[in-house]
Image 1: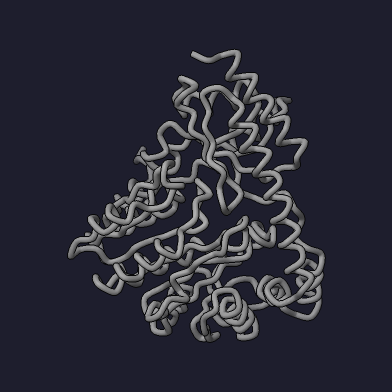
Image 2: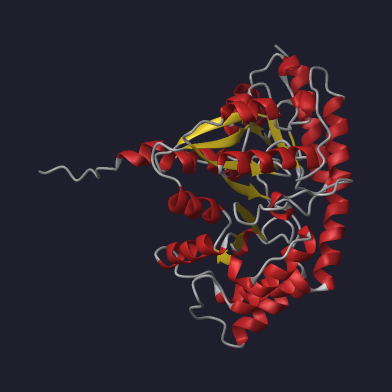
Length: 396
């Protein structure tokens, strides 16, 4: 009988995965077996999507927004994004610069497909969001990593960044506030990135999905810097700030000619984002009620951050920086004697706490774990107590 094995393209061997979803699957399996798991692994707010946004979506469906839209999105929704970004980043954005996509990862993938050839080099952060290196490898480009170090608040080393640029460098990916560390880029950092981009003709993809989740810090974007509208792609969406992860609506703000190419890629992939989610986005980005909901969420996240940081720093052998953005902490656990993979695995299987090993985000995550403070205060306290008790009882 002839073999029915599927022959996969070589590029599939270069495509990575995302540790958070792998650990989530293992945690769900343990839960199905009756184990009580505290979920600190997945970057998903535990808040419900604000009522006014849900009501806008329901109204949209009832009024016929259940059909195809233009590939880049409904004009009014693109206009809402343009006005929101213009207001938040103090720069002029036009609806023609905006492309709506079913999840912001598509912004990076489409930009890579449109602008980067196999063999080109792309600079990206380590530790960093796993999709960056995975997508760069997938298209046959070469990832070059700039290390984010604990001692500098997980900012980029600017000298190291400059040293990575070669004649083959085509793109620089930045993320601020950052996943997994919660680190932020300062005005000095962003200005340096912009100068580097101008000097070497680089395209900057700026992932700012956590830009509204900052604590006592003013978010800085390269998009607002002089001359950077022509060489910056803003990668953002509604998932994090509006608790809309399952709605799958991201957006790009790109140079006009590139936005047209992203439109073509949308036509050839998803056709368009869901119509009713686009109408919901108009409500999310333009209503005072949504703005108040975001502020309330940020206040809660800031309280949770302090709880987690203070509790982790009380554990012997653990050192935890206090992040200025996102909803993650990235504690150093080297002093416990545990390897990050061993600790994450045993916390899940023995203590019932799901966390991620730092190396799920790149080699520079060695000696760290990532915790998402996206659960209730009671749930966080339970998870933190379990972590503390496990390390105390099993320290090598």
